[in-house]
Image (cartoon, rainbow, N blue to C red; front, side, top):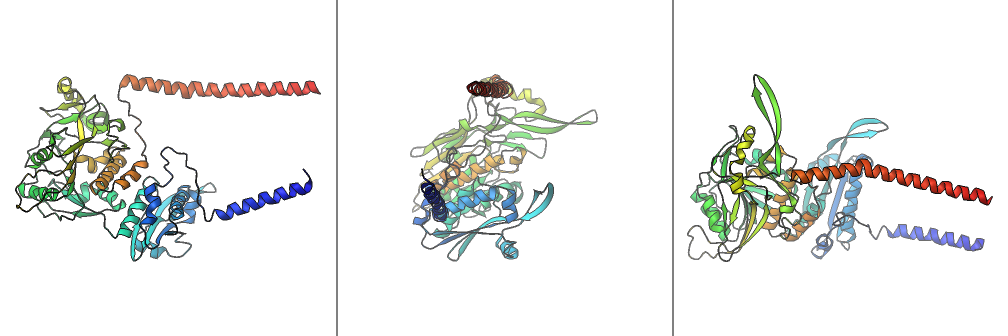
Length: 520
């Protein structure tokens, strides 16, 4: 090859690089090799341009200092750029540093609040005030994501908000706190926060208050002993008129203020109407080998001892015990329950019942003498042999439900969707007793989406897989065997493999050097 040909080839290569760089401003491409393509937006998000009549502007307010300190903001920017790239000009992306642009007050007035984080620069740790929030604008409407520090549900959050803006609809969810001794703002504070970040506006409805028929969905949390006939009449009317409801209810009362004393619930009618709709909530407690730990104090001769034991009455529902065919649990990440009651589907004619999730086959029940004291765990097993087996813990019901009350003659029933979970504590403050709050809250948001019939949004959220449990193997012998194999691989096989390849390459190189010296 002549020198002129080399120069021409070099110039052409340089020109190709320049053209490729220029094209990147117009064409977005990213190779995503993760399982489930977690970093690629779904078809629902790619096709939003079909619904957008004007331009949607997404502004990512992020501090430059945070961009330099952590890789997450760049990944967030990439995801939003992918929206713009697939929108055919209908979505515009802007990224701004509020401090550099001197608009911190305006940004905070929108609801995007500063966060304080530790930053390591030049071997020094300092505390920096940074921003990471998103503003979505369409026509005269806007939606704000105050804090964005995760990719786990970002696509779901963006797509659901964009869709609400372009359709000019509000994502409203009604909530009835059925237990008189519980308060929404204290007992369900984590749930309220998660619903807010998911874009839902919560409308609190007092027991007995008329439920607006246009309300997309309703949560009834507890209420076995406190919802009277008039309150249940309003709920029944809402369901018969096509309303969709999640019931999180209990068959056994636990006095959390007094040593977890337990007794069967005195049903005021809620369990009866659920049986009328097609699911029996049994007045029993489910126990399982797959369970959470409980930490508690004991007094012995004036000394306080803190103990942590596995507590079978707090079942940890595992991923493999979920219905993979249902949108809510298609990629189920697990669930933590606290003194749950078993369910028995008995759907009337025309009602479709589906099991969402169950216990393991190592579960059993307490049906008579309810003992909750972790010091007396041996007494938990009094009914083990006669009640051992898989227990149903979550059910969905769909169809035109038979009314539990008499309504006016011209009242025409319409199809509805119901979800029944045999536990109210899984949505409340008890989720802080474990590290499973993300799993519980994720399930509840998916349930809300299914009740409001946005199945495609459930599919987006299902793609963002949450980490699975490390203690999912409940059989002790199997778990010990897996741990032994894991230790052997990590402490013996991998080091020996590295040593073997190192020796192999050294010997091969020495042989090659000897061959070259012989040629000389």
